[in-house]
Each structure stands twice: as C-alpha cells, then as structure tokens.
Length: 193
Image (cartoon, rainbow, N blue to C red):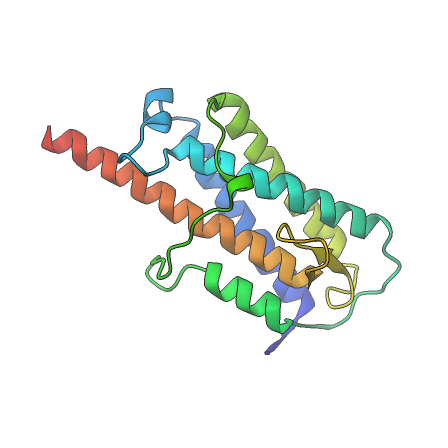
C-alpha cells in the first residue's frame, strides 16, 4: 500500500466533501417531484440515494466521533492504507470519467425508507457533510493509522481512521454519480415525451 502525507490526505478529503456539499445544495433547487421520481421500476430516486447515504453517515460519523473523543494519539506525517481499507475504497471509488465499474446491492439495513421527507433528508445529509469536514479537521491532529473504526458490516471488522474517511467519501462520490445519472435519465425521458 502506498504511503501518503497525512495532511495532504486530509486536505484532499475536505475538498472532496466540499464538492459533495455543493452538489447537495444544488439538489435543494429541484422540485420534490424531480427528487422523488424514479428513473425505472427497480431504480432509486434521488431522495432514496440521499436516504441511503444518510444511513452510512449516521453510522460512521457516530463511530468516528467516539474514536476521536477517546483519542490520545499524536498525528503522524504519513498515512499507509490497510489492505482491507484499501480494498473497500478501491471498489467504491468511481473510476476516471465518472464511471462505476462494479454494481453492488445495498445491504437490507441500508435500503431507503418507504416514506422519506425530502426537505428533512436533504438537510440531514448536508448537515452530515459539514460535520464530516469538522471531524476531518479534528483528525488532522490525530494518528490516522492507529485509530480503528468498526465497520457497518460487523463491529469486529475495523478500518484505520484514514481508510474509514476515504471509504465513506468514495461511497458518497459513487452515489452522486448515480444521482447525476438519475437526473439525466429523467431529463431524457421528458425530452422524448
């Protein structure tokens, strides 16, 4: 696994989250109809994608907060991804050209709710992103290698803090490509009709 300067990694992740915030802010300008419309029978609407992301934010932000609250480690100059964290991030991260090569099914506990309040869900997601930027700022003074975070798969499966941030943000980037594709599909459907 490649080593990276910890400060550069934190700065890049903060930049990625700011970009996600901008995209989420743009969603607030769409009508509720656009946000709730599905592009196909077994496909998610924009708000269903956001609801799915909120599930992961709730889990990982809570776990990261707990770990940082009890942290007594000093920052290290370099971060080296663990093999599992590197694997999870690689399969989640969109490829160049914003392509998503491997489709995945969401675990049952992470499926979108049946009734989603559009405004509340979007506001919650944006709030999570601002919280994530703050946690990254706090993590800048910590050891990204030694702090471990339990995954949502199982509490005994843990990732390094740096890997957890990378995985969570790559997951969001992946789903914002999905959101773009949903909106494009809906736009093309309206043009054809």
